[in-house]
Image (cartoon, rainbow, N blue to C red):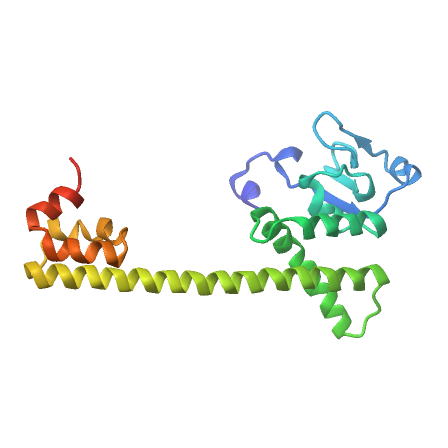
Length: 215
């Protein structure tokens, strides 16, 4: 639409490529589309149709077992899919790679679960996939919830520590100017047992010398 409005020429390579994902693809099937591999630029299992079509077929069962292909192999069937799920389970909780894959497959899970609610028949592999990925995704949510609680506790402790430092400074020096405000963060890096006696004993000059911004 933009090209038409501006009378710009759009080449095929500027268009998004259509990727067709297939759990399996026989040689006969691939030959019927004259699909060709490009092993120089792409891994095994990816086949490209004629240049003008700008389309590729991914034969998931042929993909190499690498972290980069993991999310695609989860969409496979049988042993390929099961191996991919085991690899996903083995990734450490909180792993960015694991989180990214779960986000990618979450929409697919939602679609499959919606089909179940609509009483549509699902293949056995699809039902097992829902069960296993749902368990992994639930673990991720529980971990995220726990981390959120921990972050909340840490944030609460930081706020409390800031209040203590600010209170002690004000009790010693009254209204805080920019120099005194500037030493609050460095003092918060200490434990209350450490910063309390310092704030009660050191003079303004000593505090600024020790915790003030170095120039």
